[in-house]
Image (cartoon, rainbow, N blue to C red):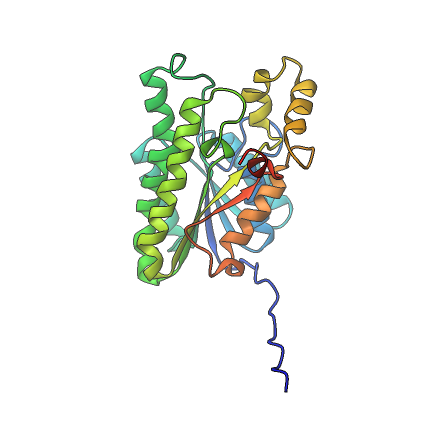
Length: 275
């Protein structure tokens, strides 16, 4: 006699009632950054989204877009390299909402160049923004998550943190590698408390940051630079911020309830191509 087929529940990606903090929820230029797309995605799934960004006007723009769709969001100004800024934002969030269910750390800056083009000051500044801010943010949310024995932490790294991407990007690459390892360690330490921590690793994504900071490494013509980047990818195109945001929403939700301490590549096959 055949065993009965177990019922398979639908993916529980509903985030209604969750408080989601997105550090880096604005955009360096008009358009859809990963952080901004993630904020709207979380709001569409029912979450209350707290948008943190160094550029308060950009955070407010993200909130405006969420409110236009009937979602819930609020904006906070914070330089994520400054401990007092982070502490004040989270104090306000905890005072207003009582808890943080999901921390999405979307912060990242860089400077192209190798060891001879990167000063000690460059490396310190980029490390403070990309790595130290993740630790400081986790310090703000982990006590409450431990108390409730639940919570999800998402960090956004980059394929540059695990592979050479065709041009020297020393400080960005090494700090994103550190983000991956820090997230792994948090996942292991806090798994007994029901807290999950994972890293999303985007590949070559078409975002305002690419146009502003990276495209010139391929060509002075933006369209040519985008075409050159697309040719590197097995899927023959760059990804979109929305494709990364959907991966983040999955890991933030109960659909990923048994996933922790790992990396989700959203790279169109790029990493496998050079493995």
